[in-house]
Length: 488
Image 1 (tube, helix red, strand yellow):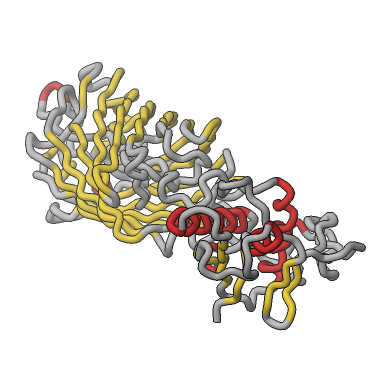
Image 2 (cartoon, rainbow, N blue to C red):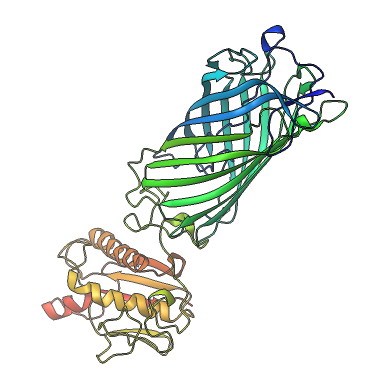
């Protein structure tokens, strides 16, 4: 019965070998390292993601270790083990990526192996082919669905047995598709073609192949949670051989756990098993890695840099609604009282918006200070700022909280204009600037309280629209105000 090289198996043999031959007796230009971690930002484990880092914080770094058991062995046609050409291999990857100019990033991976053993007397250690991984994001997952294009190049730098193929560049273009869902679920798919010069080891012909990877992950606590579990499938189908054999259709299944002890650090680990026969896929694998994303321009760690973040101190909630503005949006509110279902203690009764325990969603006693009547906002309190400043006085927080609740309780208000007005003290230019800054401050506050940014605009009119004539203190006080106007 003829012998077979096994590169992977759950319980079955894989690569067919006509005769068992030592590694030292023939060329070993065969890359048996199928575990190639995703290099760029926003990845799973081996499945690339579509995202790129913000240009203000462009760098990401990573380091992986993986141990593969029996990535290349000889077995009988019935699957009985005859010889372990490579019985164990400890590999490592040192990676970095940088956003050159949004939406383009470039990654690099230096793979090497620290220990390799087997009856084929393979070299103990060596380096693999350096990987250059340019990525172009075509669609931003925060706005619709994630779509990207990766055009990987592998430079023939390998030394040591079974660490690379022909002494030629490998070109590996692939499409990346992924999406995150608000509850914490995420999927990703990669599909491409690895174009390379064919090499042969016994009856294994390692040439160009179709490649595919799929991943599904779930992050506990939603997108901002600290723990994620998931599974991936990583495989290929050779298409250069005259007769496609099972050793050229590898498939490995991986499971993983990710832990984020802080927004900048990620630890990942998990097992892998051979699912379909094919060279380079081991009987089993274990891996662990760490990633570091240094961040100094994103105070709320929501992936939107502070310069573009309309809510730099409140993280985006990634709910597929204005996700690129950096602000949380309105959540489901069945009784339309301004309190989201998740926080509503009285889901069948409307909150009385009056500044008295307005966050519990229950009716109570009290005089409302903000109402929406006959299509207009009615304000019974004045929004106050520090003198000559756009900084809110703390006493105005409760009033603006009620404005936010009224907006969320009345979704029919499609657009609200926040108008800033000043008195005529000082120059018109300074007053126009101050009124705009105050209107912007109020808009930001409402957004931080959960009003969708798309429903709010801000405009400053300075002293141009006085409510009262005269320069006495009472008239000037009436003219210093913020108004809320429904835009038709």
